[in-house]
Length: 218
Length: 244
Image (cartoon, rainbow over all chains, first blue to last red):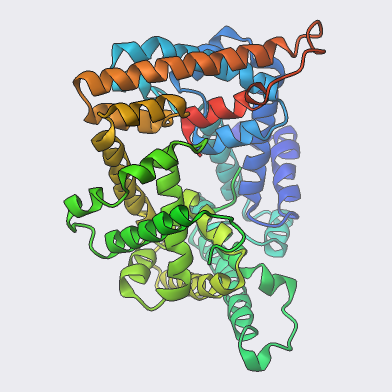
């Protein structure tokens, strides 16, 4: 994987996707994963709804997990959703009279979660590999930084202490800013400071704190 | 607190009671379980069955949302609320969605800002102490959800023997699949048979709606009008399987 990634062609796709994702609000890895899951679901609904193997896999996992099922129903293709879930309900209907509650539990993980995890590993490894790359560093510094979960995963993949410490101190500075925004938001709620305008960063500070701790939804 | 949600009187009362129940569960997780099962009354359950939602999902969702709304305004200084949140570095991803919903209210937003500023400070302190990065785990709301869920499922299992309940249940959309599994684990004999047969009929109806939804997307039948049940059938099918 590493040797393939070092080729210019690999760098030009995934690496540049990461650079672009750092320009978007929130954790770049979360942004890319949301995109990957969206395109996986769109592709499934557009091309693979009638694929026998896909159907079998979906029967075993009883479709998708809660989050990805919700993303699927909001994808704007109710016909595809109807075809997939008709098959799953038929399967449940067949198993229900046997009264075995285990048979009514998902036997496999949600396929979108599996797909997401593969991409997550790829982005984390790539980020860890290119952390000393100047362009990526500049993009990371200018961004909102990573969420706690992805920061922790990247840190686990970095072997050089210098790079690791730099990444952590960058996120400490970002945490300082987030905390200042929260404190300012709170101060401006007090009656004697109510006339002061709450900036958009301060207004969004709670949401951003949640995003940092648990990441963004797909 | 819930102005604008247009709740009827019994719902207000039920939800207030559920919030009380969750608050007690949060403070004394090993409290008197017998007392808890009496809480949602038989008539409440019959009324919940008139809703187009799994009654267990309703009890879980509304009680946790209500608990968080109250907690972020009134329980900020209560150690039983703050300490588990600090220990887990906040709620998990699923329950953070409840916090995001609570953010829409200005007063709750202040409480959330206080709690999350403290959580960020805690993460920062961990980073500075070179203790490694903390991971959000052991969400206290997950534990509460498990307790409330077990309670809701037990209530359904306790009341499911009578003919009146069974008539109401047959006319309702029933429980979702995750809760059906839990109810079936608690039941034996006729009550279990009733639940299975009732859900077989409900599944046949749902499958019929899905089939019509698919058929009416065929260009030869697009002129045929869809019923409301057919239109919402894909979403209802997903809701039955995963609850949300």
